[in-house]
Structure formats: C-alpha cells, structure tokens
Length: 92
Image (cartoon, rainbow, N blue to C red):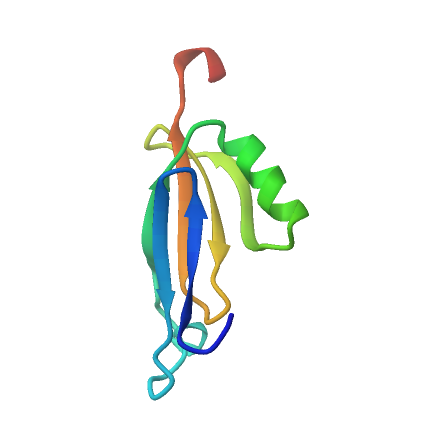
C-alpha cells in the first residue's frame, strides 16, 4: 500500500484503506475484529478472483450458522474485511 492509504474498488463500491502511522498496527491488536463487512454476489467466484490476484485471505468461504457464506481477507496493515452472501435454500 502506498503511503497515506489506498482505495479498494469493485464496480460501484469504493472504500479507502487509510494509514495511521503513529498508531499501533491492527495486526498487533489481540482482539481486533473486522472493520468492514461487504455483502456480495457469487462469494466463491470473488474469493477465487482475489486469491489469484494475491490478496491476503485469512479464511476460505464457508457456510455460517447465521445464514451467510463468508470469507475474510486482511488489509496490508492488518484490518480484516469479511465478505459474504446470503445462503439460498438451494445451497444448503
């Protein structure tokens, strides 16, 4: 990531990944949960796409008891972004 931050962009979605150089990195915080949840379509296809592009993925897609299929990726400074989609009854 270049100094000062970067943008994560997909279609019309855009989020800035900021930089806080004087703060403790998120990766060093013991109990740091995700900072964003991204609802997407075709979560498995998106997972394969970003994995192939070298994203720092921390978990593969899996069905969760709360009715979502999710995976998590990590920003360069350690923040987590969880991506998921609603599980359709035909996918159960």
